[in-house]
Image (cartoon, one colour):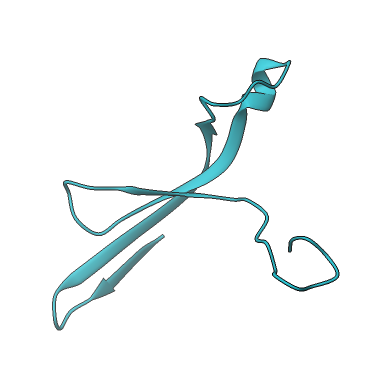
Length: 65
């Protein structure tokens, strides 16, 4: 997906899902060492990778959402 704003001129590209390697993982199977991620960028010299992980909710009955 691409978002474009004409005034002021800006853009943002969002794409995914893609596999992101978790280099710190010690999972027994290699496929379990990957996480689902998305990439977003709005300049040509930098990209951000957004990992899909549970979000902790402090004080809630459930530890994450």
